Length: 355
Image (cartoon, rainbow, N blue to C red):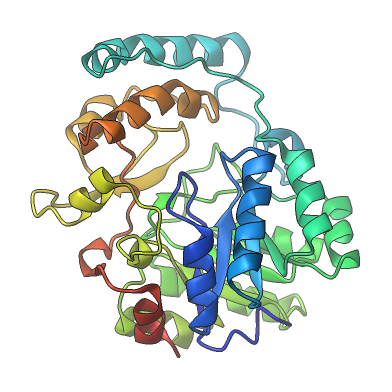
C-alpha cells in the first residue's frame, strides 16, 4: 500500500481554509512524506486546479481530503442535538449576537445555508477521475458504495476517527487507513457523530486502543496515521511506539513558506500574547481547537452545535478580520504543540519528524 510505504512516515494534514496548497503538498512529498490537499470549502473547480497544480510540481503520490455531509454519513448518529425550528432559531440568535463584531469589521454576518453539501458528489467524481493516490474523509463515514468506487479506481480510502467505536465502524466498512485524531489536534475534531463529545484521552492512548481493535477485528493490515499536537520528534516517536504507522501534522507546517497561512494567522502564531489553545464551536458550529482570542471567549458558550450553518454565518467576519490584519476573529486553528512550529521549509519539518 502506498500509505504504508511512506518513506518518512510523515503526512501533511489537509488544512481547509487556505493553509494547504499544492506547493506544500508537493514539498512534503518530495521530502519523502505524503501530502493531502484540503477539498473542504473549495469549489470543485478550485479543487481541480489545485490537483493539477500538484501534478505540475511533483510525480510523488498525494491525496485529497473531503468533508462528508450529514446526508452522506452512514455512521450511526445518536438521536438528539438541535433539529428543525429549534436549530434555525439557535443559529438566528447566534447570527444576531455577532452583529456588533460584524459591524466593527464593516460587514454583516453571512447566511446560514443549511443543508450545504460542499459539492460532495462533484468532488467525488473529480478525485476518481484524477486518480489521486488516496482520499481521506472527515466529519463522517461514507457509504460502502463510495468506498467501493474508490477501490475500483485504485484509490486508497482513509477515515478520520477519534475513538474505538468510530474506528470499529470504519474498519468494518473496509477502509484502507485510519487517521486517529487525538484531543491535542488543531482544527476541527473529526467526530463521525457531530453530537458526540470527543474522547479526551491522550493521542497515544487512543492510537494504542485503535491498533488493538484493528488486531481484534482481523484488520492488522489497516494503516494508522496519528494526528494531534505532533510538532516534535519526541511526540512523533511516542505515537509510533503506540502503534501508528505514520504521523499526520498540520500545525507544524503552518509557518512554512509553502503553506498558504495568511499573514494575520502567521503573526498570531508567533505572538507571545497568545497563551493557550481552546476547543470551541464559535467559528463553525463544530468543535475545533484554536488559539484562544477575545472573540472565542465572548462567543464560545452561545455558539450552537450547528454545522455548516455557523461556518457560513461567520465567514464574512473571519475574512474581513484577516484582510484587516486583525486576527481576533480569524479561526486560528492550532494544536497543543503550536509553540514548537517554526518558519522553516516543509522539508525541514518532515526530516525533523521522520522515523
